[in-house]
Image (cartoon, rainbow, N blue to C red):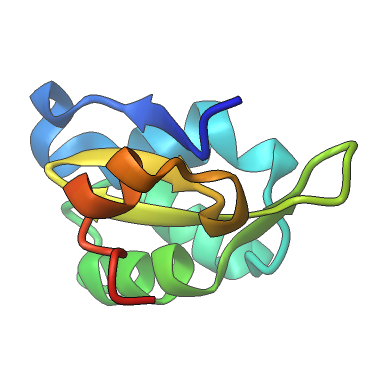
Length: 98
């Protein structure tokens, strides 16, 4: 099992946070409803990027096996679980020192 799952491709550009809010957020905890609305409003909302920064650094998903997943964005938006990452994944994503 991989510790990395792509959620939203970078082809969505500035709409990655909005797409996440529309289609991916239901399984994620730690997202305030007001923040969801800002993201759903899209990039024209003056608080969009500040809200996204907060959401993508605090959101967490616990899967049915108790593994904790976090959001990670580097172009694409990923869900990552460090405990499940292979050595190769750790190296490729810069977690090899952890």
